[in-house]
Image (cartoon, rainbow, N blue to C red):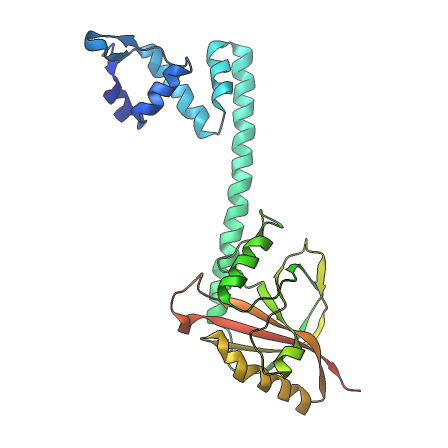
Length: 266
C-alpha cells in the first residue's frame, strides 16, 4: 500500500477539489508533508482525517466542530459525536418526509388538473378556508408572480408555487360590472396557518383551459347563471390556478378555476 499520495490523487479518490484540500490544510485539519519541488504529500493519517471530514460535512457539521473533534478524540467524545450524527440523520429524515409529502401532493394536483370538468358551471359547497393574503392591486401575470413570492415567505416549510392549486387572486365584482376582468385586488394562498378566512358555503365554480383573458367571456356567464337561478353573488370572485406558466409554457395547457360564493335571494 502506498504511503504517500499527491494532491491530484487525493482529489480524485475523494472527489474533493484541490482548493478544498488546501482549505482543510489551512484550518489545520490536514498536515501533508512536502516532497520534491515542494509538492504536497498526503499520508495515511491524512486519509482517515479526510474520511471523518467527509462524513461529518455530509451531515452538515460546521468546520469548527469537526476541527474540535479531530483534535480531541476519545471514546466519550466519539460517543457524543455519534449521538449528534444520529440526531442530524433523524432531522434529515423528517425534512425528506416533508418534502416527499409535498411532492406527492403536487403530483396529485397535476393529476387532478387533468381530471377537471371544463367549461361547465357547477354548484359546490366549501368549508371555511383560511389563507395568507396580500391586498395589493395588480393587473399582470408578472405582478401576480411577484406578490405570490412575497406570500410564500409566510410559511416557508409548507408553501410552494409549483403545482399548488391553492394559489389565487381576488377579483371584485364591482370591477367585473365595469367590464374590467384584470383589475385584481390582491392574491391569496390557502393554508391552515393563515389569518384570513374564505367564508364557507355555496359556490358556483367554472373551470377552463387556456388564456386567463377568457374571464371576459366566462365571468359574465357565471353571473348570468347566478341571476337566472335565484342566487345573489357575494364578492369577491376567486380565481384559482391549477396550471400556469410555472408548470407549462404551453398556454393551451393552463387551467383556471373561477369560484363565486352565492346566497339565495330569499
